[in-house]
Image (cartoon, rainbow, N blue to C red):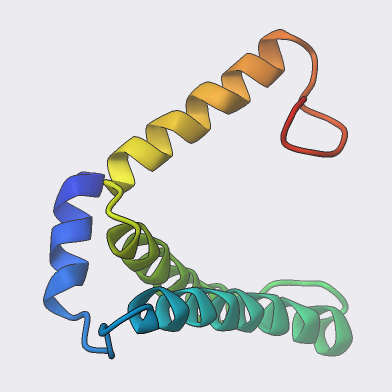
Length: 110
């Protein structure tokens, strides 16, 4: 599946308020919430499982990462951006940083 196909598929299940700026607000908050769920699942691995990931937890985390991806796709849609373009621009940025020896550090302008 391509990013374009995925973004079109997510649009089919995108049921949320979209009037005014509510769509971008809803999807941005959803993205933050789902990313928190991924982190929370791993936090419990550290607390309860001595940092050892079980296959069951990996499956649970994969579902949450899928939800993160859905929200990333819909944030892009709300911004009028093709997910494929956002992904390509991100890789170009990271490759440039790598070539210049600037992967480590802080800030966007590395």
